[in-house]
Length: 120
Length: 160
Ligand SMILES: [Mg+2]
Image 1 (cartoon, each protein chain N blue to C red):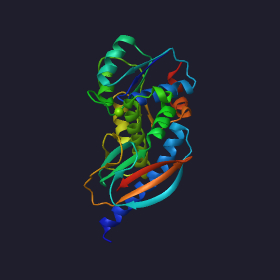
Image 2: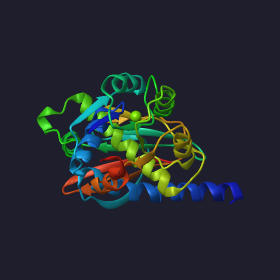
Image 3: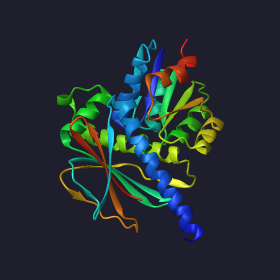
Image 4: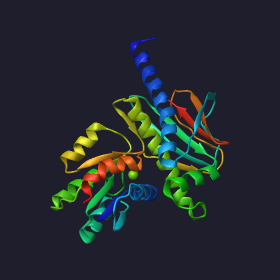
């Protein structure tokens, strides 16, 4: 199982990555990308099994990233990691092909209950 | 009070209440740090009297500014706790990024808790230095909310 974390904040990537390990998921590799564009490039090369994406990022934001990835035919589950619980935003992301969302701040328990379905 | 003023006052009170709850929650869930709210005081200026600060502007239903300020050693300690990096390995960039994300989570939580529609948050800005005065054009008075983590002070400045 390979996970891709797309976030412009390196601290946030570390927080998410640490949270995943604390949640006890069996993960072989965690890859990181600093924006949507890099996320697309990494995913094209590495074919991760689950993607966690931030919303606000320079170059390419999370919503565009979801749309572009789906346009390319990639069906990998994508979970948005957002600061606000803006329902409108979440609905838009889901419509564009995202599979769920996690609100910051989160606990390992939240990660376990939200992401469990994506781990085989 | 006009109806508009009443509504603005409701928004202000809701945001402030949400802010206090969220500050405590963010430190607890992300940094495993139990902090206590000490109260608020009016301030004449928006001065970040600590070395590690994150700032976020608010626009829309209400305009304002929120600043989270910690002393450098506490900023390093918190970033270390939330990332798992040992303090000596934390670069200036991580410290700035960490305090910015902390402010981001706090303001996002404040907005969600207050349940106010039509409120936009600016991306976070980190200020690392000493006694930065922030000029901010809002008509709202400045308050300083203080929280304690053991013997350390966490200051949350708010003009809302
Ligand atoms: Mg971001």
